Image (cartoon, rainbow, N blue to C red; front, side, top):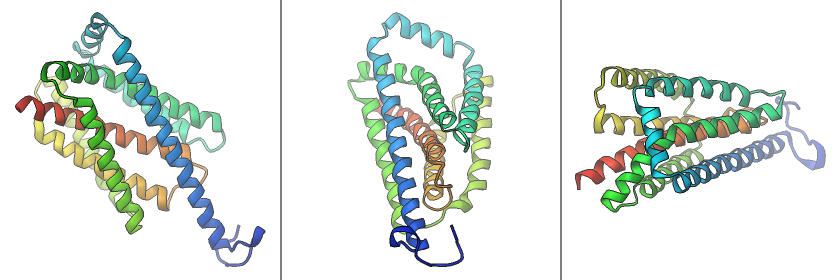
Length: 244
């Protein structure tokens, strides 16, 4: 494929038209895989929340939150790194799908204690906390996606800033776990803003920068940002609902 000339290729397409069609196909595949990851995550969590007994849920909370949450987080980060590495493997399609599947399962595991707590809040407060958080998450993600695809602005410049902010946020989270202090509403709002920035950045990369054979890796990155946004939306809705 020539990037320096504009002449007809097969089937009468110009090189520019061929590249545009290839990018459009990549975008469709990326969002199809993203939808699949979200659907799988939703189905697994719904099954666990409805089928696990109250005693089992209590044991999960005791096991995962009883002084071992830092280890759970570190394990999640390690598994996430492996999943992303596999998903970026350009020579093995099976490795890419294995990476995406592994990441979805890891998200299901780390989300489970929060969802169990949110479900308990729902029973006490009589509000659909998880549903409201899901709607807010999808609305924000859809709005940010629309901004990128409408303006076609390249948000690649945000990458270093977002990375630094993420490491700072991770430092606060680790300190909160070690020293036992609550990060509070302001931190939750800050994380929602940070994840919104990541969605802008990753969506921009899908539109402008990702190689067109990396749709699985692109879907994983988008899923990671949206899942983390959902995490903090749940925390926000719980916090606001408990104040009513």
